[in-house]
Length: 362
Image (cartoon, rainbow, N blue to C red; front, side):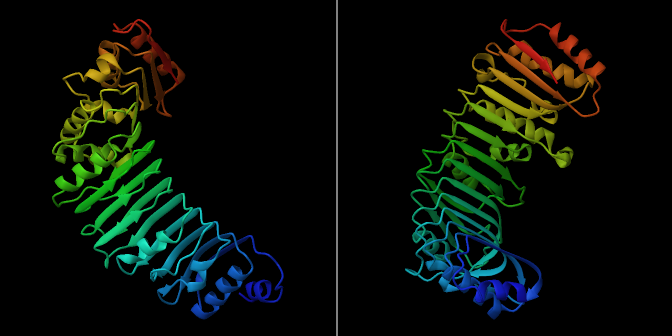
């Protein structure tokens, strides 16, 4: 700590381009305030705070008027209490907040109002127990990640970001959403945690807000949620869909997941590219969706094994993919080259609807 004191307080003329403070032991809050004030007066551009304090404290006011600040990353033990009209961060481009406590409804609104050039915002594991309305409204924001908000189920999540191109949401469904002006959205990544409460209204609004996206990542455990949407919106412009899986997916309800996949595929009239893990083969609908019959051009299956039922399920796409041009199968690590050849021979000899289909086994 004495080293930091010397660097910040003794060499008064030195410009600080980047100040990263990572400390796993407790430090005095007054000393911390002094460091931040010194960095701001040195024209700091990139500030990264990851420390443990003796108690939750507010970020110093001087930080909110730092004209030189380009990126701000804050992690652990801070309370965000932002009075109206205080913030002036004209050059702030990147804002990452992790394990930060929002004091009231106005905190996020007042913060964003003073960040006129913000493009990238990440909210990860932030505390929301005092929040009833959480309003993310910004004209220039391009990337938004929401990665779990503690005690945030009852809050009204409002998103109004007309320039947003990328939206990542890893959380439970909130009681209420207002999602507007996402006409610029290019890619969305959605992972919904399973909950025991009613989610129909929230789920319908969430998916309705992103239905114009051309590229979607929807985690396998989120498929069941689609059945709660009344109705599920049509994703008229979606051309690329990825359905990732993870190790615990075997605990997932395959019956509900299968119905969810069928519902989703029936709402994707323009789908051209589909990527998913082998486990999703269990969900394939008996009623072949029109996108597979007429639109789907490329399919990628990951973590593929040589089990008989998996190969049989893969034939489903050969038999029904009228526009299919490429089927790529990435085998599991324990599948040998000999077994890869066997899979290739079986699929190559199988009947296919598309005469232009190329099969690649890797």
